[in-house]
Image (cartoon, rainbow, N blue to C red; front, side, top):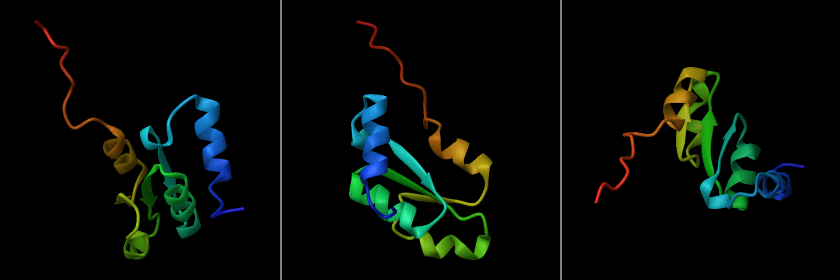
Length: 83
């Protein structure tokens, strides 16, 4: 049960990924606590605007699904090295 990091780590392992390369979107404080314990990045989804301050331990807090997509998008495209 949350905030146990085991389910998060099981998902990371199933993906063949490293925890530091993953991000979890959570809509509860126990989600964010589990993510922190697992060592992954955390996006707090405050689906009620008055909850924004409750997610202060998340890396970023969003209030809409659109903001989640924006938060997951790279800031700028990575260009391959053209030596």
